[in-house]
Length: 185
Image (cartoon, rainbow, N blue to C red; front, side, top):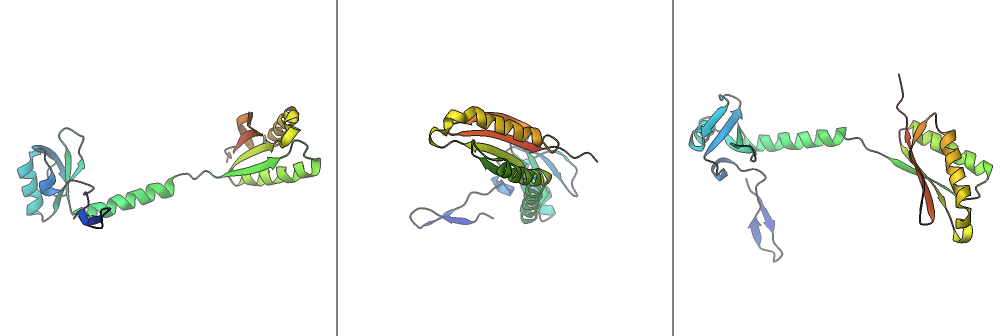
């Protein structure tokens, strides 16, 4: 079942199989599982005979176990099931979206309220909010203004989100993270 892959000179070389199957299994005894077989520890020759009788493959599924665990199954079907499981796990994985909101140290009230409304929308959608104050040139002298601005921002959003990281100065940016609160039903 091994495919081919080209090396750097254009010649074809055999590709490594993902799992050891049938005669590639080097253990003397294996733990056999699968349909139509009594689970247990068998010698490799017995296990191969069981697989051959059912016209299926002996696939090593847990090589680090002692003895290695092998399953009697059609190898192509096994690969299909593995891909399907990985796809399901990827679909169930939680995707965290981070939205950024940028302030200046002297942001006026109207701009602040406009950005606050956007942050509320982002938190309601379940996204994290990264709010930061960007200091240009000598405006770094007003870092206390930036911290006050971010703390006010966090206070205005405390019903929708909680502060994950308090304002912290990193270079010319003072950054703060907010995560959405879990909704109680």
